[in-house]
Image: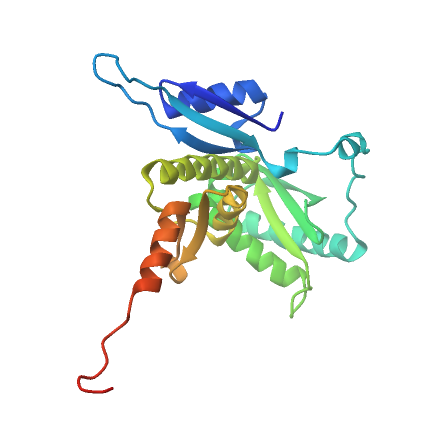
Length: 254
């Protein structure tokens, strides 16, 4: 069963009902709002909210894929392992200068060429900073140092502490799904501001399989933000752009 339709007194209740029917969590499905609740007059003409929940493509595996053995555990290449140990030494010095007593573990990341440095410390809040800004600053510095003067091509250092990266990713995925549903329900774009480039990539990835919304980053630097655009609003904007005749030409010119 790849999709179901469900009803509820509210959109959220309908979504929860659909999730129970599929037996999955909210970030594993794409939600289409089929109809909002209508109260009716004296109970006549009342309708419940109705949604369709579809499993994301990554979950609709073929039987062959389901029976395939799990992938082998990733092993960090010799070059990446050496860079990871170098980054660990530098990170230990940085943390010590911040006045934090910590232990650092090195492990391979999810992507090829990615090395994760896990910091175990009592004062993790100081290491994380506002929305992970301190961790990202350390990552940039360590990637440059560990990769050499020109930077090792394909190498990416990820700094984490107390599972912050996973918690942040989960919160962003939940937020993206909520805002995507809001954009579809209200039929107008929703703006997401004050998030890093890493966070924007997570939001883009969560909503890329939803055929009823598109995402777009606009602006520059600290003013860069992300738009979640419902399909109807996007088509309307494109039609207005196509119909815009542009500025009038000089009078009298043929």
